[in-house]
Length: 315
Image (cartoon, rainbow, N blue to C red; front, side, top):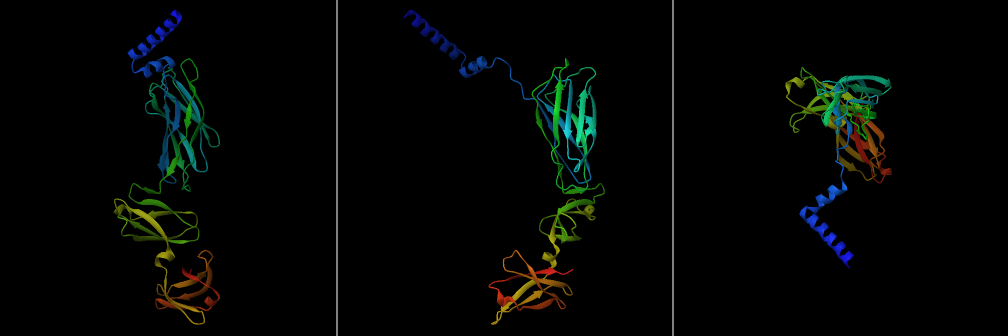
């Protein structure tokens, strides 16, 4: 009984101690976590926008370490999309030297060290600025700029581990204003399609500024009037859809033939197409709007339960 009473008394004392330390959760955490907690160490490559053919720098950010004096890492990139132009020391590293070289296609190795074993004292510091040039034909992005094989060392050469790695990338911006105000821009397209390029400052009134026949999935364009506007927005539309003809005045005869009127630009030639499912289109005729209008007859319409029509501007 006495032993039991002593055990009960000790339990009550323990409870009283937790009550004295209220909130007790903090006391319990102190008992369970005697060692101090540190932020995760990470090396992150930043991201930046760039226009095709232009140069840009992204930053290498070291976070969560206060005792490292040296660092080395490899940075992989897609050399078909970007060119690595070199590395500069981060502005806050006054007593460190940065060296780099290409060790393999698409891989640049970066070495950062201090001859005086000076520590990287900040917990969130830019340790390097990495320069890239985006390919003139790249309209999507650089893909991952991925760090790997990272080594951080203390003054006594002990490694700092573990290290979380985060990739960056270069985003492609679709427009670039030159110093003289002329604007380079690109728009998506389909090869061999003719487009009308339009510009606006208010999304209400659009001005026709260019026509272009696409040869690839993007059109690289120039707005020479850019200096006359503080800003401008751009869009493209299929040339035929904007200035092509219109179909109307349908009449189905008793024998099943279909007549309709085409209104188009005077002198422009059109190809008439027909479809039963809006997916597969077949050329069924051609005509020129000699006086701005064309009267067209589809003699084969009787052979179809339904048929849709559209126009294409002939070459």
